[in-house]
Length: 127
Ligand code: SF4
Image 1: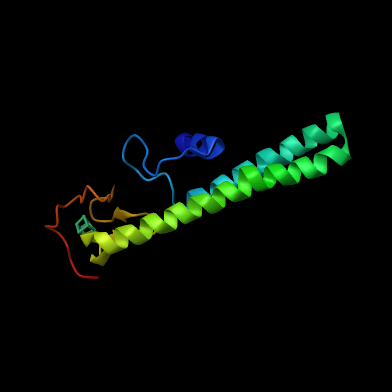
Image 2 (image 1 turned 60 degrees about the vertical axis):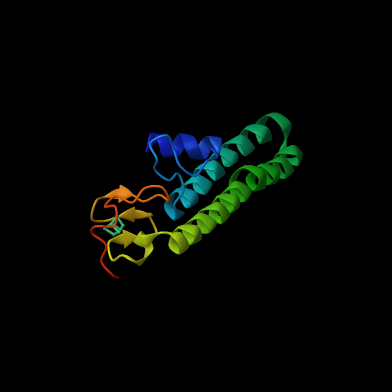
């Protein structure tokens, strides 16, 4: 959970983390957008306190777009493209044990990657 928080606060790039798990899912994208929005709100209050409302509103809106909304949009585009590519390329996408929203095998409880199919194709069953 802490990894997800740090990834989202730093808007880290790279689809997979060091352990080979995907960084992005719909849940982490939405959660990251909410966390960054909360940070922007706090920053907006600080700017308001030190710089006044005339500075706070435009800077907060710019931060909200640049740090919260646009990165979430980019993450969604990357997630959609990656999910689509997995569905087109992988054997798992046609298997009944595959969970496409989390991109993992429910039978082995492991993430599926283009270079790694947990069962090696032995336990594939049509969906
Ligand atoms: S059982 Fe095998 S083919 Fe099916 S989703 Fe899991 S790893 Fe993929």
